[in-house]
Amino acid sequence: MRGLVIKSTGSWYTVKTEEGKTIDCKIKGNFRLKGIRSTNPVAVGDHVVITPNQEGTAFITEIEDRRNYIIRKSPNLSKQSHILAANIDQAFLIVTTNYPETSTTFIDRFLASAEAYRIPVTLVFNKHDLLDEDELRYQHAVMHLYESLDYQCVEIQASAETESEYSVEKVKPLLAGKVTLLSGNSGVGKSTIINALLPHANLRTAEISDAHNTGMHTTTFSEMLELPMGGYLIDTPGIKGFGTFDIEREELTSYFREIFKFSKDCRFSNCTHTHEPGCAVRKAVEDHYIAESRYNSYLSMLEDKDENKYREAF
Ligand code: GDP
Ligand code: ZN
Image (cartoon, rainbow, N blue to C red; front, side, top):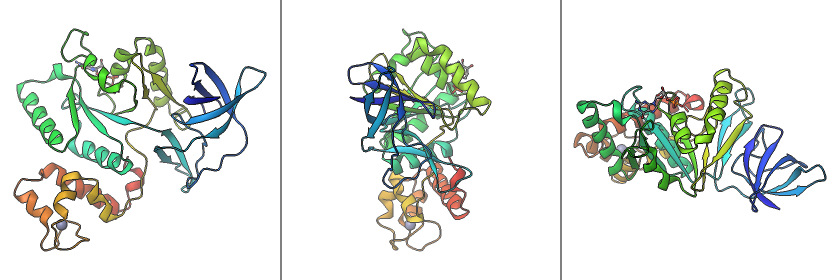
């Protein structure tokens, strides 16, 4: 029987079979996964083969190759990683222009790490109702910047009634049939969005955030929430972005779409766009073809890289 892992407690896995049944499963045998040394062999989002047993549970006996996965390095065992989720179709980064303010640096770091994982991101600007005229004007300028880089942007008010043009109804078509990772700083409205999309998830979300706040379960527990319109939300405590990724200085350029485009005209192919003569990127910043906020985010990530702070960057 084949199925999808929708919940993991570390020792038990809930698998949704192709027939639509959910079965509690344990792992049978040792899985050796190519290229990763992880503390957990199976993660939510994994497609698996299961063999039912007499107790009404089942054993996971096979894992299909992952399209992608996000990991977190175990703090104590630097060579070991923990797989947070696999086979993600897209990420929704929930941001707020105010109450609280999400910095463009935070957005750019998330987008850069998503580029590294080749996961498409939609920027969801929440709390539309709280913004005054100036704040709205600023928000629209920020949206315009990211739309010009081909990132999809939507404005919502998660707390709005369904009739409102800014209610979560707006994002439902974007979620249908896909596995979506929900991310964003604390307080931006993630739980409110989940509750509006899944009216029955109320209690569960509260439980998860409690567990998260007390630091419990954060390394072992994760689950996917099934959406009424098809598809799943990945709501894993502690995911602020994508896990550590070891990137080379030159690679960073390719994770900033517009910087990458202009870098092809830099005099040196290994240009870091900081001090080199003939740098087309710095010229483009001066000429306002590249937004200063984006360039500054690039520089801050480059600095982190130099100081080897990457491990904790996300
Ligand atoms: P989380 O930390 O990302 O899960 O954020 P929550 O969903 O807990 O939301 C934080 C606070 O913002 C709560 O008091 C919500 O009621 C409030 N909130 C969420 N979305 C909106 C919105 O669209 N408008 C307003 N005015 N408040 C919101
Ligand atoms: Zn350059």
